[in-house]
Image (cartoon, rainbow, N blue to C red; front, top):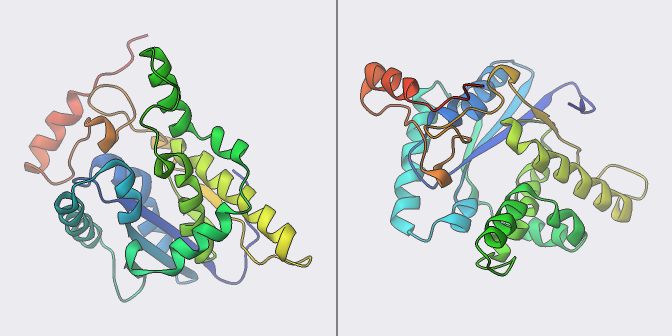
Length: 242
């Protein structure tokens, strides 16, 4: 991990996409490490509900609205103190899409071509004999730029994520460096962020053995059924026997 340049205070930011019920992967990848960092009196913490990102994969407004409430309640139940952190809904900040466009104008297409989500979509299409870009929207293709805007808007130095999201933090750094080179006049207009990964649970497997994700419908809800149900669900995770 590349360590950011630290000031007297450290700014931490993370968000969760509002496409379904919060799950165990959200907790170990974002919520737990973020709350741990936020306990430091020298930390300014920014936590958000990523409802713009939800539109990439979900076209059901009611589901997104319900998920926003569920995830907000989960943050609070896990110990978030609204008096100590900045807790917000992504779509309430109009400057985020504005910054997204400014960053889009300096982002190379080749960088987006290397994004894991886009490459996975292309591979899946080709495996089915379809056009490489079949059903690939500009939302999916360019969402690393939106994620960069989320981070760079608030000058975040540390971003708690799972290992699968590290590439997006590296892309945010690349985009920020390009922007600074063009418009910074030798200074650093945009702060370069660094990923914070809990190596013990860097990529949590879902019920089918793939990365736990709402997109794969293989998640384990945090509070559904109580401790016993949670333990039983974890025991059903498909593991690699090699």
